[in-house]
Length: 351
Ligand SMILES: Nc1ncnc2c1ncn2[C@@H]1O[C@H](COP(=O)(O)OP(=O)(O)OP(=O)(O)O)[C@@H](O)[C@H]1O
Image 1: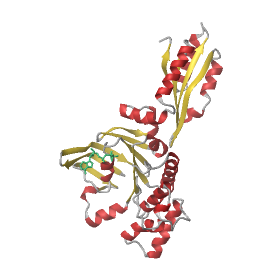
Image 2: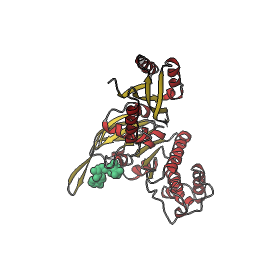
Image 3: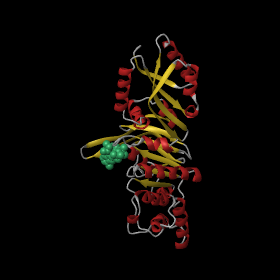
Image 4: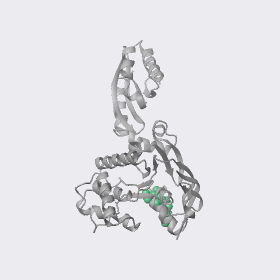
């Protein structure tokens, strides 16, 4: 388990003190994939560098598996660091070494086994990350995704209990990002390793994390299971992160379509529906239309995303009914609410 207890960190810069982290309390249980999301300068790197003793808290305590990291030094700190693997945005590979030799490197540093044993271990890891056949390639001959796979294999060489991922997919294109994220998920499932993911992309959080903490100007402003945070973001900054993800078209596109629809169908009611978990798989909307046949529906925009805990989706619809049948629209909305679909009337002539 990883624990941050009342942790603050102030750097002494030339221009004066810089408060990078303020009063952070965080518990990361074993075996979970825990995301820390924040914009540039929020303090993400500082936070994870305190986990392996690369930074020490100014006040408070960081414990990893019951051990206060700042109390460690010398050999004990080196041993503790072997329990923590790390992957980086720019891979940080050794360019003059082959794939296999890069993966062997941390084993050499830790003086583990003989050459043959190290090679065997590295071969297993290269296979685990899906790079068999490329053992003798040099980093310059690999794609970005393949380089990050080498980075992951190297980070796992000393069988760490924790893997820290610092913006590990930020330099990759969307498809390669997803492939690397799938690999991290697979490694978490297969090895039971705890993964701490630092990112500025909510997509990364949604794809693989169980839990998320939102870091803003050095403080954790929101924290919880990923699905809960996506469903009910509390803080403005969290809403911004969630909106990065849950809107397929741009907000402006949706607004334009809504305005056009209202101009052409002035009786319309525009509603945003939010579905989560199993609701997204149920035929709730078709059942609503069966129960309220007087109501016509047009779809404006919709999207659905998968999280590790289930799906979350939003659908913008327009509901219309003949004169005298307006009550049916309210009935339809009430029906959706009883099915625990969140409804938000975003524009209507009746309002
Ligand atoms: N060694 C240092 N000396 C002085 N200030 C620092 C130092 N390292 C970081 N900072 C400052 O601390 C704050 C947090 O930086 P940090 O790198 O942890 O943020 P971040 O969220 O990881 O941002 P980025 O993604 O841009 O690296 C920033 O204001 C940064 O300028």
